[in-house]
Image 1 (cartoon, rainbow, N blue to C red):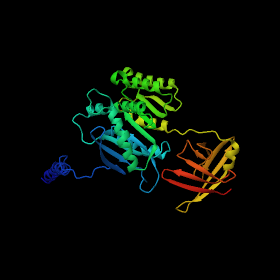
Image 2 (cartoon, helix red, strand yellow):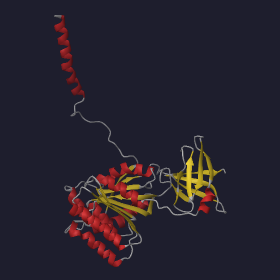
Image 3 (cartoon, one colour):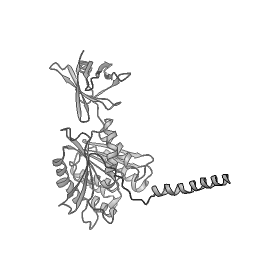
Image 4 (cartoon, rainbow, N blue to C red):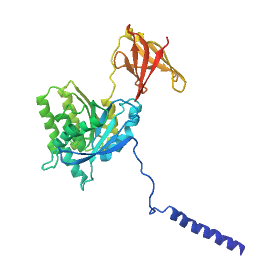
Length: 377
């Protein structure tokens, strides 16, 4: 009898426990958790006289924007309803490794979600017949309203604007390149829909080429290797080949078929590789006798009291740098006669020289902060 009673107690305990757990963790219970918020972001709305429509303008500021007086490139990101969050998650790592400058990110999308979001995209990114907007008026919105708004409201660099978009938005980036070539300095076009309008982009390019001898811009054209070879891969490669043959002296072109990528999955890779390519640092040659004037040991006491040393050496015409944290010297390359960078680390610095051209100190450039070391020998 005692064994039977104990068994009944155990059975009742296990029978009731799941009910208690379900009652406290029911998926139908009201949710009271706070939403995830993107730090340093702002939500603005801009009514356009050019298109007659209102747009949600999503702004992501650099982490130390408020504590600095620096100006920043602006990455204008189309399809902000999707790609603003994507860019917010990407740029920190790229900037931390010195692959791109820290930017202001501006996402552009509809202020009120339309009944048919795909129709909204066609209405804005291409020249559809009977469209209430069209790519021409949407581009005028950028030129006459959005860009002036951003550059008066924020510390933006007017000579470093980037336009990013994929699919139909990538087509719009190409449209903007040929119709307003000076509006954006860099274009990242991920899997652009060049098939649209019986390949109208090629007509835009031909009209531009007939009237211009140069295209002073940087363009990244990418497509996924898993996309349709006829409607997507072939025309994108054909446009890249055509631009190469034009020989525009001011054009920097990056084109790539990205392995294992399809039309929607290409964006993170396309934006990452495209931005890296368009911001790739170009090294110049500096004579060894000038480099020899920078050789020496540089020293500073950091805010926490730690002493920091940085050694500059010259071996067979190549300048090397080594801090106390590194086991071996690393090659550095010249951006100018006095400014250098490393391809191995997110490192960029400037030698400060005297009237004889010899360095007396150097200044590190780290995102929103510059700090200097004095030469001690």
